[in-house]
Image (cartoon, rainbow, N blue to C red; front, side):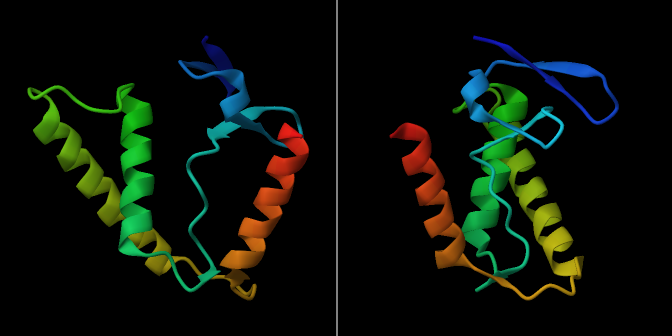
Amino acid sequence: MPCVAIGASGTSFHATLRPSRWRKDDEGKQWMCRNIKPLFNFDPPATDAEIHDAALQFVRKLSGTNKPSKRNEAAFEHAVSSIARCAQELLNSLETSQPPRDREEVAAKARARAADRFA
């Protein structure tokens, strides 16, 4: 079931996702899929595997497929590795004055939200 997401510029784009997979910001606009998690400013920092998984999820969203055909496999893997490198570069260059967030604390909050949502 497709949904329409409204971007910051007010333009719309279509995604072939169920609406429940999209987040809403304070203004009610729909944004990023919940499967892509923030990786910046955590203690311990994001691992290479977490960055690769986020890049893989991003490429899956863009391509509209979980597993590419043999014909597209090389392009798919190249995109994942390129995006993972760029994501690592981004995370390494970002700065903040905030203290690092605790992974367990953030995970516990997410579990509590999920329990409320699916109770």
